[in-house]
Length: 181
Image (cartoon, rainbow, N blue to C red; front, side, top):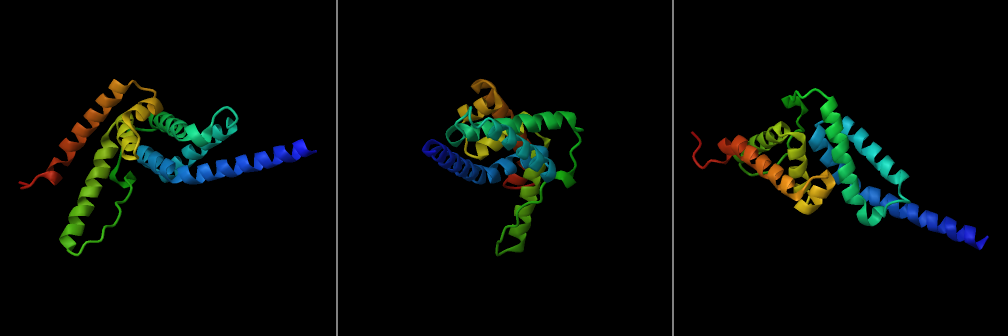
């Protein structure tokens, strides 16, 4: 009887820890998926499925310690698979609206909004793996972690990041020039 009680207590504490882990990782996971698929509903479904698959195998993994890289790897693969099945056409209406920024001068607010929109469009034009590398690094992951999550070599990850940055710089050049023509 005491063994059953200890097992039940252990299970409850494990469930509480996993619930806490899901609560902590969910906002970043969902934001990452949205950035890859540009559709909130689809991103929510993909993230939900990834959590479900990971939690089913919670006894095989230490999700509290190693779960975040596994989660982001699963989301990346799910988003890549979904994107390959989906039509490659990207419209401006599928880019998330930019965050509003408060500034005292209306022209500054307009410039920030235009730049945010241009960044969103430029990111949407990147191929999925390049976008994934940029987004994962923006979330604070090192290149080594990004390479592991995407199941790529570190050198390939650096190449994808370099190409993505180069394409973003080219696309955003008109917004970043000192004296636009």
